[in-house]
Length: 182
Image 1 (cartoon, rainbow, N blue to C red):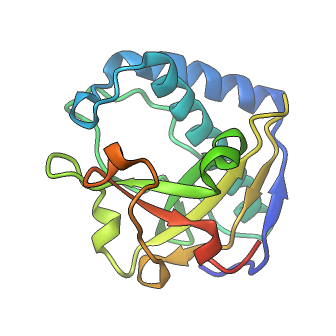
Image 2: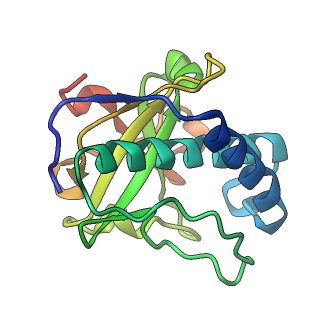
């Protein structure tokens, strides 16, 4: 999985940005995040947009390094069809993609959040062999340039509590400072 070991930078085409925006608009009607006290539809839509931008950036990076990689999935699943499956598959291995916006990183530090409540828990947190690729998406620029960090296995990560008190017990966070590469 380790096709690169330094941070990569990617810019996406306008077509990919528009496709990610449309996906975020379309998926919003299939989502229920009340269990995590999130009912702000604009934030949920924005989170899905940024996530899809991150997936596209990771796809471009791995493809440029010669990987056999599945493209991001734009299918809209009903709530019953949703799963925790991998975001991408690289050379036959599952890869999760976690993306953080630069605007949010300025407030709380560059970090990536994982579900960790009694109701909804990201299974990747408990799988030491799982692969994750972290992305910072610069949402302060219209072309959304992304920094893609080399993929890591869960066993090499340090999961911490979030800085926001009301999220403790519901989320776990990986902070960029703990990755020791920037």
